[in-house]
Length: 286
Image (tube, rainbow, N blue to C red; front, top):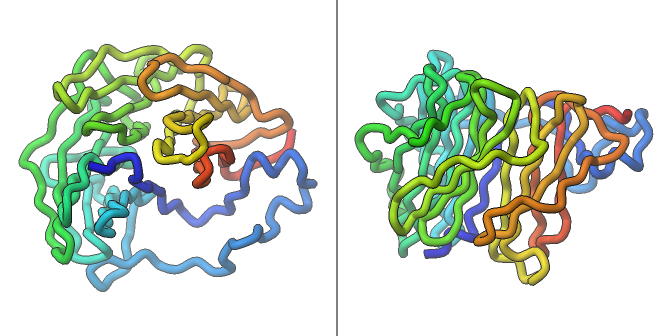
């Protein structure tokens, strides 16, 4: 199994994105300039030979060992749909949601990949199921039914959750609480297939979801196994926090000075594990 190499990205609505870290050094007039490597045009997302119409972001995860790609999105009638490698569109039965889904690679085994798909129910509770993809096949194998995340895990029913895949089929999930603006994390032990009790993330208060990312494969020993969370504080400032896999405690909280934003930021990690880019769109300098 090689879950630590499971790239995951979000296909966002057509808004201008710029690295918040760079904003500290850019004038306002530079905010909409193209960045190195940035495309000049937008292309339609296509599955099954037709354009995708989605409410919110399309989420996707790829198995780098066999190049299996699973895309998940919320359709215009608030149901969830998936596609394997831009192929046939398949509805995930039994799921209705007002928020973006989340997806991760749980198991990579030869030519087969098992992904976990999460969604916020219309009642605010969080549910998940598994989708298996075999290389060369455009038809996903969906596990029947949905499992509710236990221990009182709930969030506003319009808010997404964020997940990262960890070794041994494990998962860390972050979500904003349903009764306050506090953010929480909860761990799924893949070996025992059991969820721990949720843990409040200290000083993480927001009106939008907290986003997680990790790179357990980094060659840089200092950052290997570091999980990074970002959120937009109630004061609109971008916050960053970290956790070392296996320790369970958060550390290294910082605020990106001089940067304010709207919406929910996200984070990406380079191959060496050191460079992090929190995003917020749109972003303005304070």
